[in-house]
Amino acid sequence: MSYSWALIIIGIALAALVALGIFNPLSFGASTGQSGFSSVAPITQGYSLSTNGDFSVNLRNIAGVPIKILSVQAKHEETGVTKTQSIGNLVVNSGSESGILTVSGFGAQTAGSRYNMNLIISYEASGLNHTSTGKVWGTV
Image (cartoon, rainbow, N blue to C red):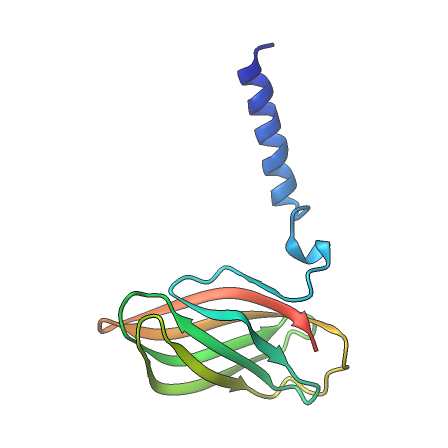
């Protein structure tokens, strides 16, 4: 067997482990984190879920052009509850932050418990509607 065959087998094994979620950052006990997002993303540790069920997030425009944030949809993975907050036409310049946006209605949360939120951020850039999707996690 040549080295190239060995490398192919190792590559396939690693791909299988990734597909099975073995390298999921949540499994390593990261207290907060995020993954996914494209042109609009939460700032690092710029999000939280309060004990009264309000999810707050501060977004950064990395699209390279000014955008209008239209809405933020959040789905609480543990409960399955999905809430959407219409923002209107909040203009965020390239490289700037939105300020704190809040999506309410996730019910009472236990302090110290972990949460996972799937986010869909709807925005307009250069006259076209777009979405940026991803996941954030942390501790209440």
